[in-house]
Length: 192
Image 1 (cartoon, helix red, strand yellow):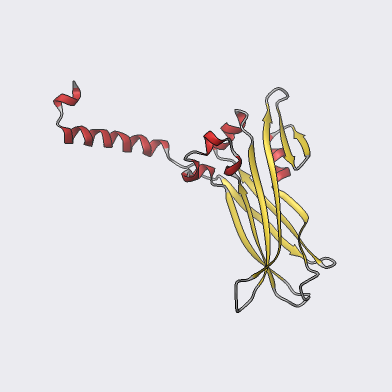
Image 2 (cartoon, one colour):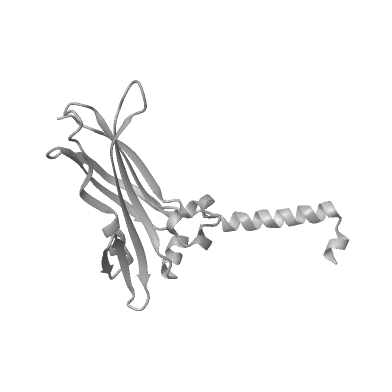
């Protein structure tokens, strides 16, 4: 009935105005959320390269709600070591990955962090996120094939891995800012 009173152009304008108003309310990103890199240090003990890092994780509301509903969330840290070359692409000297699965256990009201075959339970979400967000003495490269005075650099990435979410949740999630939690840094390795 309303459609017959309005012309086709007026109906489309009204519909598009309603849709734009709805989208402006529904897609407002929350502030102070994401991943902040607090510390990133590379050391060369005894022919290897180790990395120390510390990130601050602040989960957006939609990620926290998914966790509370029993959806496991995966985080990944990746460090790739390169040797610069002037004549070709930089040579990859080493690559190391770590991944964690964070889940909420409703029966025990505890948080579980899994890495590989190891599992650890925590009483609060903050404790579980603290276990994920720090790493020390993480071996990222073997420097046996590299000359001691050769320059190196490490590309470090810490992110929320949306590719391991349940398949129905992955549809359209790549464009949502709330699910994009990532920090990337490059650090030069000092020659010794």
